[in-house]
Length: 172
Length: 416
Image 1 (tube, chains in turn green, blue):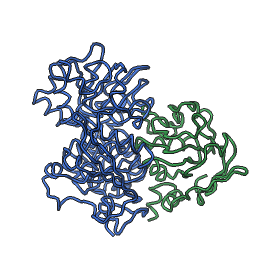
Image 2 (tube, each protein chain N blue to C red):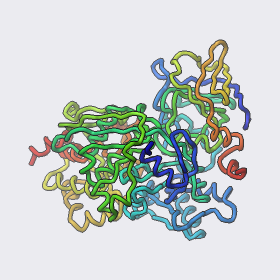
Image 3 (cartoon, rainbow over the protein chains, first blue to last red):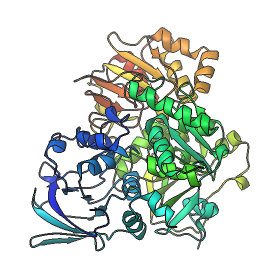
């Protein structure tokens, strides 16, 4: 799936009290109790292990899934685990209204696509519907619903297409 | 048109004529990794680093501060793996005795005003306290910085925050940081470079600047710079000409002012650092434990103040007081000046230097229903255990330990 610019998958809409879940921090995504894990393949089981309402995410996630959240996804610590745990599960991308700055870098550097949809309304997309994410255009589409967000930046696209920061650097 | 502080630092580090939105490769003066994520940095370098994984030895080092000494086998393994790598490549390790890496970098005067530092610590932007750039990054970025000395960075927009007025007596740097979190939450400054001005920061001590800048991460900001004042310049023994300041005609995306005149002590209730209240509204909350330390409030100045407040007083029955100096040098000074005895005699536990209450396990976690007052920077659900963590300054934490409930330092002064 690496290098595709259009991603199609089942959409996890993370919500809290009827609103898109905001301020999901890295301890909710990947709790600090498991930070000593260095093997990416072993990180998947801890994804959202500390996120209220989604603690069973790792059991239910399927390869190809897309994750949608509210503002400031991935705020908090610098742990790469919070990106790698999704890669381990085969999640294709995370989409959010906005991301924490360090999270954004970590995702870009490991060639994991993230797309920002600023001001996305809470109820436009539904849990588990099949959606299409256009990375180049920054557009999420499902059925008749379509939302235009921020296109992938040039550096993010280049690193993504290379397969990660080190692979990108080899081409420089 | 002039440049903001971050634009000037990036320009002088290989960024050329950079402006907000530009992606530039910047030269990094200090390249660090901790025991947390350090092993993954080593793993990346072994996989991708080739024959020469380290660009410049003298600028590259490890700092162990998360789990010190290791109390889990995985952490012990990771630390040992780093030590072996460091010996092989002749890199310095600030080992389990050294304390919090971000503080060591300032203490050792590596992070001078205008320099750049990266590491695997999301509070490395604490360097903003001395007018230097710092940024926490993941293990891929840091491995890349070890190998090449550079990282890419998208130049952020800058905003200016002017703090107007003088806070009330007994109000500390932490309370001002909480006032900023109350005002800006975690969204308004997201991804911005913040510069803080006003009479309070012009007179703040280096330690006060550290506390204020350390909460930039919780505000969602890239960094919160405090332009070096005389206290900071004196610490580094440099003049204004040797530090970096924004140009007077620099362009800011927003110009905020925040009134701190008469500000009283604040406290952040669970579940987030932006859930801020006056301490006076929370005085009916009973307390089980108090943690004093962290990169936010673990300096000599902080712990000396705690010792002075605790001197001759006792921690309330049934309340745990856990104190962790930020660095070994802080520990030494507290020891030499008899201040640890004040904390000990009051009933406190003093641990070795490090990240203490924030990293899992070093000085304990909280249990279900346990109420903890912490001088650290995060109280997200589950972060420090199952309990409920409130964030406050040294005065509030010390007073709460003695009174067994949330209390302001003003109340403590009435207790003998």
